[in-house]
Each structure stands twice: as C-alpha cells, then as structure tokens.
Length: 227
Image (tube, rainbow, N blue to C red; front, side):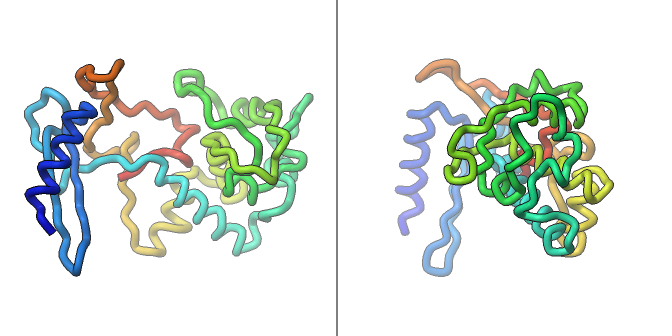
C-alpha cells in the first residue's frame, strides 16, 4: 500500500472538485492507513485533524429505524397496521395518506411519500400540522411496491415513536435504544450540539467552496445527520 500515492491522488481529486478538506481511512491487510488534507472550513486556516468531526448524511435514519423496531418487538408498534390506526393525527379531512400505508413501508422507503420539504417552511411547524400536511399528500401510484427515498417518511416515523413512547424523539432514542447499548450520542444540532466541520457548497463548477451551516427544524431530527 503506497500511502504517498494515495495521498497525492486524493489531493488531486480534492482540487479538481473544490473540496476544501477531508479525511480518508483505508483498512488493508490488518493496517489502517489515514490521509488528512486541507482545512476544516474554507479560509479558516484550521487544518483537518484525525479527530475532526465530519457529519454523516442521514445516518440518524438507521437509529430511528432501530428504535421503531424495538417498539415493534415490545408490541407498542405494528409493522403492517395502517399508519392512521397508530397515529391519529393522520386522520384529517381529504386525507390521501395513512389509511393504507404502514410502518414497514416508511422504514423501507416504499410508502410513496416524496423526498422532502424545505427546512425554512418547517421552522415553526407543529407535529399536528406537519402530519396533517402529510396526510393530504398523494402517494405515488406504486406505493408499497416501489422504492422512493423519502426524508418525510422518517419524520413521520419519528412522530409515531413519540406518540406511542409518550416522550420526545431524542429522549426516546436515548432511553430505549442508546443508553442500554452503552452508546453515547453525538448531535450536531441544539440542544447539546457538538462542534463539527461545516458542510460546503459551490455555486458553479470550479467556483470556490463556501461554508454552509446546518439548519434543521426539530421536526426533521429523526431523519437528520450525526457524527
């Protein structure tokens, strides 16, 4: 394993795609090879370190799904019961979603819900209003038989967990799943958000990358990012 060649190649790719900094680790033949490059934040002068915390996109869905399955195992949730039977806030006038869709479909991204909604529209949204909006969404015709990635589906799952557990999603996650496993959570959003490397975006190919701050309304936490 030629780490120098790997490092040079990684730097070339970073320059080509405007990536300001990163970590790369490769496990090979019993040894771990690590390459670090660039800055934590473009223009900050802070070099990327081995302990720099990079958020991992949507890994929270894994924990939300595991939490839901614990509640299924305990008999508090049913994988195949219609969602509206388990989450009354989905029963609203003109509802199209919830009467046939199930938790199994939410967890497998086959409920027919769209990918997501803009965070700015959700900053002050209550659970009841969010679920009422979801109930009025028209699922894609292939609901139940086709994969369609949906952040909304995991937000609904989080609300379902809150309803049956009678506690906030984060409290339920820690009390029911993480603490018994001895897992210490690491959040990037308040409360108790930990310092982390910001994301970056470029407006056009070849343009300089600009830091992007994480904005996440409370309603989206069950599908969010962790590190």
